[in-house]
Image (cartoon, rainbow, N blue to C red; front, side):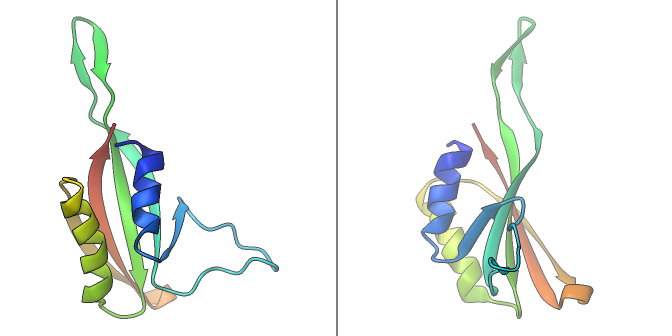
Amino acid sequence: MTLTELAQLLKATGFSVAYSHFKVTENNPAPDPPFITYLEFDSDNFHADNKTYKQVKNVNVELYTVKKDLAAEKKIEDIFDANDIPYESDETYIKDQDLFQKIYQIGVI
């Protein structure tokens, strides 16, 4: 799966989706939660014989909600499960933004 294919899958949730962040301007305000961002944070490439045989990008898929939203989480998890995308997750509350952040860590090629 590529980053482009991942973006298409995430858009199937019906939530606003952006790579890294939403570009907010006076004419283009930030979307209301729930929304999703995703960002490559490092790699786990496969190496042999002094070559990189397969590049694997580790990506954080971040779901932002105003409350703990099990239905929103399930939409993302169902898409991952239906497409055989293994994931790990973590959650935090961002006090100064009054938002919950659910982070899914996945690998893409």
